[in-house]
Length: 371
Figure 1 (cartoon, one colour):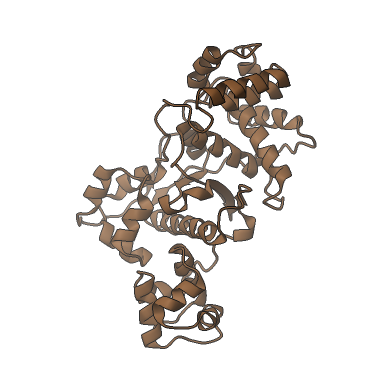
Figure 2 (tube, rainbow, N blue to C red):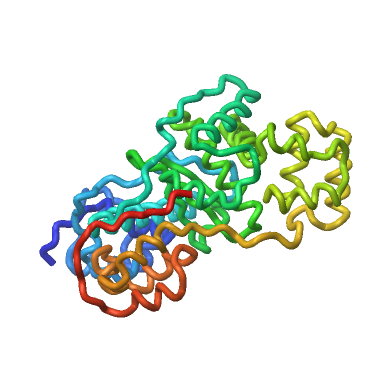
């Protein structure tokens, strides 16, 4: 096997499959120490070992070859929720799926697809206190030319502003959500296993990290609280929401606002409290009522989940010039894995059309939709 091996690609593939070094070692009949040395580049795997690793990780051997793009998402720069029950292995797997989408983006751009321009870095407002986050959320709305009413679809808004939103694999849904800057491109990865209202709040929470915390160390309770406050203020800005917010706890009234503002009743209660509309006593009454209704974890009927659409649009543009096999080959993964990673990102109809080989052509393809 004459390919030049990049040890980082072995680590990448292992983490992408959600395996520990010990688990991979068992699959290839090696010791965890040997796997560690291989991934560090201390020893070079022989052909048989590399073939076993390739088989165990379901990638072709050329996946491990050196690539022009040798830098991956820095795990330490990712803003994850403070959920101690989530393993590092699952978090790393979700980050590597993020790397896959970055490689896919690079591939699509090389095919002439132009993604929306990033529109966060031009926004400058650094709050010095928690209350100033209200102002930051309002100013971002102004910067993006928005009013103070409900946001119909937060995911499409983010995509139109150059933020790439991708789903987290079902096997990693306990990760919840995370965000990161990759070079000049902001990314948000979301789990869609929960409620539609939770996914919207998570998206706005991660937007808060991208806007407020680019230079902050991820993982602190302070930054998490700030991102929560930003999410509430961005989704239900003071100038719009306070005019409609009930002055006392009323389940039916808040249930109606839920579908107008597309926030859970519980999030609306916290928002009303942060704005000084509801007292602590009213908040306690609200949560007692919600618990008695059995709605603490699930409030029942909601709107349709807001899945990302950018990759569906991108692949629609080139679906008559490529196929799943070709894309999988260029990305050095199996077609089955490609379909799995794209789940929740592109439609079943498009998957079927991409599964047919078509003639290739050239030319620049530009997204026209803005918002």
